[in-house]
Image 1 (cartoon, rainbow, N blue to C red):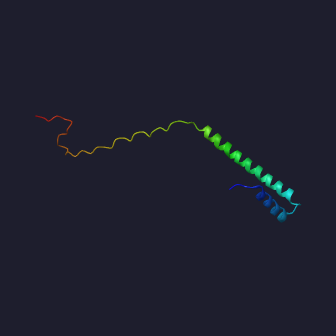
Image 2: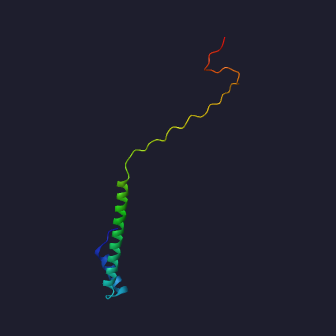
Image 3: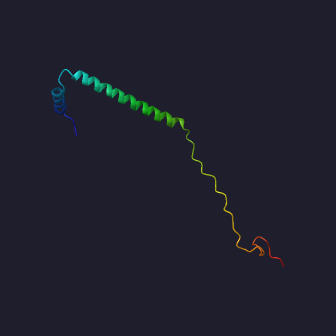
Length: 89
């Protein structure tokens, strides 16, 4: 939607009727002060985020160490031969 000059003029006439000519400078000052505070807060937030990003080192993520091997349970009975030992003849 494009703003035309008559929209702005109509808005100014409505504001003039509601607030009157005596309060318009006061209202303008309050709006200007609010805009300065908002701009200051956004600038501070932007600077904080930027400095936090620059302060953290850009190191690649290291993978976690490998898990220790699980203990192997022997299915053979205590008197039987294991696969690692050759059969006795």
